Length: 242
Image 1 (cartoon, rainbow, N blue to C red):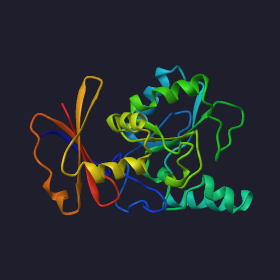
Image 2: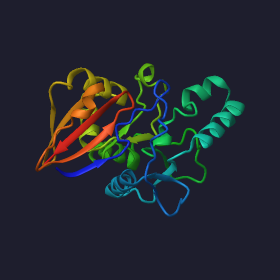
Image 3: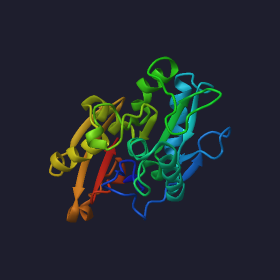
C-alpha cells in the first residue's frame, strides 16, 4: 500500500446532529500572509489558493473566516444573538460544537471591499466569484449550503461558505446535486457491499464505505494510493486511486 494518509478526514460530517468529535485535530496553516489569523487544514489551504490563482482572484477574493475554536464559535453565536435575534442567528450561525469551521475544512469567502460583513459576506454568482464557483469542485471544494437544501443542512443558503471534501467527492456531489449529508447517506446505503467507481481527470477512483464492525476490515491495496476518512456517523470512507 502506497501513501496511506489517515486523518480525521475530509468527509467528516459536522452539523447540529453530528457535533465535532473531540479527537479531531486539524493540521492548520495560514491561508494568506495578508490575513495571518485565518487558518485552514494544510491541504485545503493549498488547494484553495490554487483555485483562487486559477481564476485570477488573488486581489479580488478575500478569505473572511476559516478555522474557529469552539470558544470563538460560542462568542460569534452570543454576539449575533444579541445583535440580530434568535431567528437570524439560527439561520446563519451554527451552534457551538456543531460548526464546520471547527474542522479546519470550511472557509467563508468575500469579494474584496472596504467593508465586509463577517457573518454574511458578499460573494456574488458572477465575475471572479462565479469563476471560482465553477472551478471549486476541480480543487475539492463544494458550496456547502445551497439554496433549496435548507431542510437537509439545517442552515440557510450561504453563497460564501465552501467546504473541502476532496476532488473525487466534490465532483461527484456537484454531478449528483448532493449535499454532504446526502452524499454520506448515499455511501452508507449503497456502497458498503460494492465500490463506487469514478474517473476524474486521468485518475480512476474507487470509493468504499466501511460501517460499524467492518471498520477493522480495510484491505491492503498494493499499487494504489488511498485516503481514509471518518464520516462522524460511525463509519469510514476509503478512497483509493492509481
